[in-house]
Length: 170
Image 1 (tube, rainbow, N blue to C red):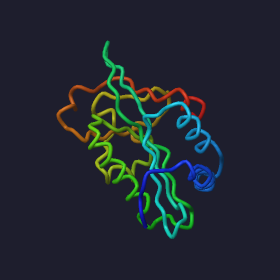
Image 2 (cartoon, rainbow, N blue to C red):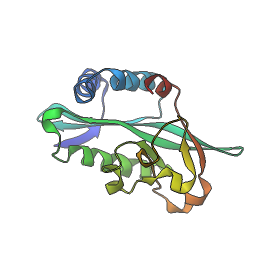
Image 3 (cartoon, one colour):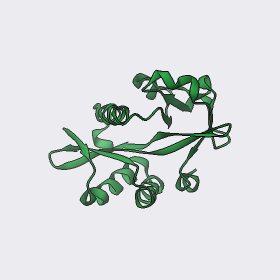
Image 4 (cartoon, helix red, strand yellow):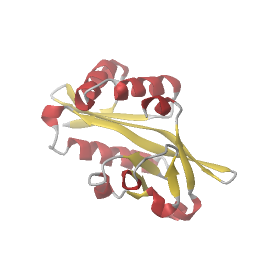
């Protein structure tokens, strides 16, 4: 299996993969809208025998802390074709994405996801650091943060805002 950056010719396969993995079109529509309006995304695919079997998407988020605005990245959606799940593909996508974002010096990455899955990569409850989701009703244990550079931990707190396209999906 190979992990690489998405290409334009992958878009249809990525859409189908997300639709199958999530049982609907919300996530794939979100990806297409953000991709069309934002050049600062990170989108990786997992390829097995010339077939895209996994996908991960990161897009910019901001933390409003007092009068300052700090930019980080939000992980999601992440999907693996149902018949390829539980084989470590998602973990490899997450690790590769985090490695790339760390090299690009993003101070933090947030995820709204499964509390049992993401801590294995170093994600912790965002509330521990005074970070909160822009959406009401998000369970505390599901909104997590990772700081690739621990020196910024005390400099990032406040309300985390995703791109406006995410409001349609929530």
